[in-house]
Image (cartoon, rainbow, N blue to C red; front, side):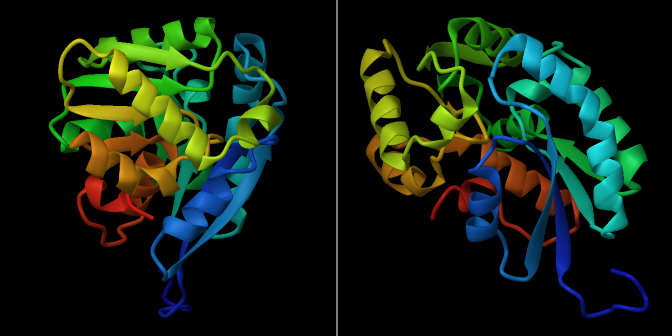
Length: 241
């Protein structure tokens, strides 16, 4: 908070793909009532390796522009976009965005790992809307972070607007079908993609499965609030509508 505006609301900066229609509504709806969400966009239409790689070049400029709005923290809200270059890229991305915006920054892939660590989750199942190529990159990233991926299931979708058209009920159904295929228990389920509507399904899924359900937007919200020094509960408290 600035000295000239001691009572102003916390401002959360969000760097999102241009075709993402889910991250802003979910963070606004599920975030703290005393915080506002402000977004800058990076060009992306299809969730492919090449487009994600090209999109990442816009990230620093987007964070710099959010700095003009005097935000308190910045989140790079794209899961595969923050892990596309493997382990270490997420941390480098956070440092670059922090330098550009002049405030703390988080990246979704790293936020997910922090949330799972806070929940003491080691063995997870993963549901995604992605193609097999991106699912494999995600598996490699999560395993390099020390997690055991018991199963990963993707929908094979490239067009990001098609991902954004999915409902929370689709995420719920995919997670339950994934759970039916597991041969043994997991510590948590991770629903990947900031454009995949899923936060509204989390409470029911946790009740049915008996384990925490982490989503990309849920983890990002928890982590950016923490970075902005906003008082929040443990990550599992955010995974409810």
